[in-house]
Length: 347
Image: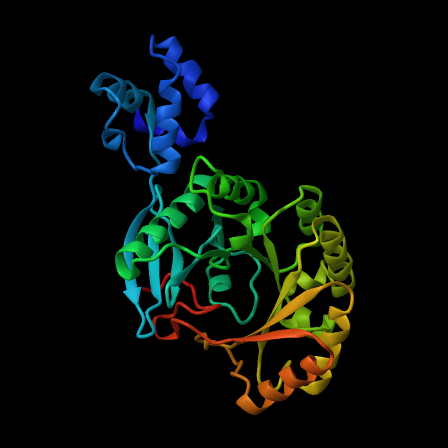
């Protein structure tokens, strides 16, 4: 069988694999062994399956393939952040970031090759949209960054954030399938509470997350608290305006009881006034939430500037007087273009 005609062995169920094995005179329990190699030990070849006979390995190799994700290049920041370019089976490149904090580490992973949303402050949007990632490619990023955390910092992943390249909710099925694999007790067994999916605010898909009883955390790339300003920098707001987004988030909270995170990229002379803070506080009244204030990381060709420290302090202080939970997120990996909004395959 030609390689291009073979199916990735990870794209079939354990039950389908068992049926295949029985049809080739193999014991069905071998399917469970192979499943463990594929998902718990996360091997990238049949040769690594040491408790499988040579004959069975050959049978698998003749009928299936691995669309393996590999590390193409790594860059390490002065602050310890590591940006990794992953090469996919078809040669496409996506980026992920490992962010260490003491004895913890966060993996920032991608869900698409490029992005279709064209947010004006984000370098990834300049790439345009190439394709969705398969759930196996998302899973592979987590495994490779998990190993990277062990190798470089001798620690486990403490958190996983879907904040890399792409809009996760435009690749809904693969993202959900990947999270199911990542959190399953018989695979990586990572708690859903340690996973955050960040979206630009696709209201229909946020409601679907609620209906599907998502157990992970939800973050919204808000960045502005009026439709005029938000539509200027987040074009998807034109079809998903703030009123509809607020209703969807209320629906999500009612179904999941999970506090929502609002990501707010603060920009000088655009969205950093006290009036902007007042509008944001009003938006936050509709549902329990916390706010992450994000520093702007310069993107070539952009006219935006980082907000002054004084305006950020005043902005945060005003929000705190409204009894809102506010965190200021300091940039990590800016010197290697690994910070928020900088992922653009320029390694």
